[in-house]
Image (cartoon, rainbow, N blue to C red; front, side, top):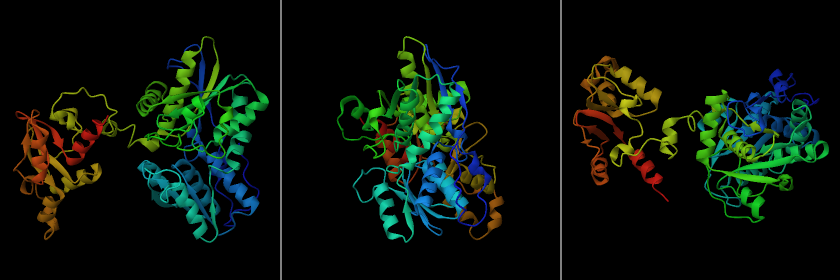
Length: 467
């Protein structure tokens, strides 16, 4: 475990005891997944206070800055982060009384963004579709803010030597002791490179024959760099926290002995399988690392003892890879194709996926359901399962804006019953016609309501058709 700084807290009060729980995370064996002839263990970094391995480096980097005089009382911590380092920094900043500004790429999950804000961080969203050197690239934005804000300290996890040191002095020794000094391989990812470099330095001393395996998302440049020594143009990937479009300054890639390229679909599938079979709720990067570890293990011809990481908790991805609708929208779902308009329906009524109201429900009930589901309109479905209307926020507003007690009136008094229905066999041009008339398409198979198709559903479907 990284020892807490002996410096007095900025606020003059004792830091919360929660900081003492950073590190010393459990190590458990994978027992219900196919690991070939190997024993595979996962280090549960999701058990750190904010739910990720980055708590370790956040604490180490802040305390190093305090010792070096780079961060003084009243200062501002500024960092570019995919979310997890930001969470650790926000926790520590709050404990020590610093202002904190986090620059986060706009592809990050809403759970992470909500969490750092709840911890008191100021969030600046940056574009995730630009690369290093672009003025709106998240690291460049953070560096610029640090120059502009008096007392600003740019943490720069990608070039901060305290990052790998946290793993060299903390994570590595923990694993070595937990494995009884018997370890053959470690599977890591590279985000900032701190885990790879810190573990590489430690195990170089105690177990020089250790294999360090890289699991890298498809689209990242690091896999090709390991395999060919060439820097290819980066693509895009949905997994958060690992993979890069450059080689971080602190990433010593010489420690890598082999690498596996894992696409988003495999990462998400393996993370979901980990939860189903082992009961471990890990994030998207966990899926990448575990997929790489499983590939490595299954390739072996003799027993080896292998460790990888549950880098963070899957609680941060409930709206994404653990959400069936998001998975389907992104093209990762496995629904059989029907070859008609029903393929565009993201929420299907017969599967219980549609938020709906009955014609005799109150408008207040309808509004509550819309708020809970974060939608602006709902279909009105009668007891026989037939769609009889559509209710949207504007319908409710017309009904209640003069008389708020009209919230107690029934849905049928405000709904639109002139429906735009299409059969599954209709064409996309018919769908566009519905949208041009400012309506939402209701798909009916005879008298059976299948679901709604919105503009967003159509855009998602067309995106999935891209080569």
